[in-house]
Image 1 (spheres, helix red, strand yellow):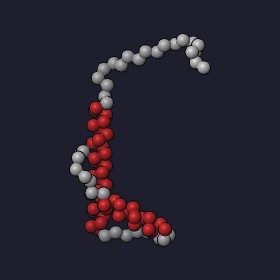
Image 2 (spheres, rainbow, N blue to C red):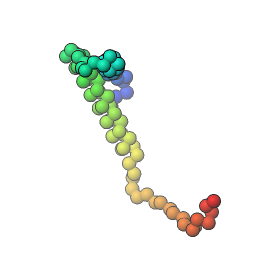
Image 3 (spheres, helix red, strand yellow):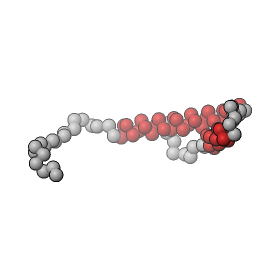
Image 4 (tube, rainbow, N blue to C red):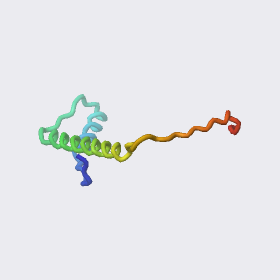
Length: 81
């Protein structure tokens, strides 16, 4: 699910901010209502699916089309300084 449209990451940013505030205040838990949880789930799912799509495309684009020839020249290290 690769997309060229902008991904709404506001719920992720809100969650990160919420955790930072809770951590700095030494709270033991954070709470969110179900709508915030759904928005966070949707944003994370979209980001993960987009990243997976990009990775798959990168693999396809860089896939070797056959045998590769590698040439190795051994000179005994005479030119190494």
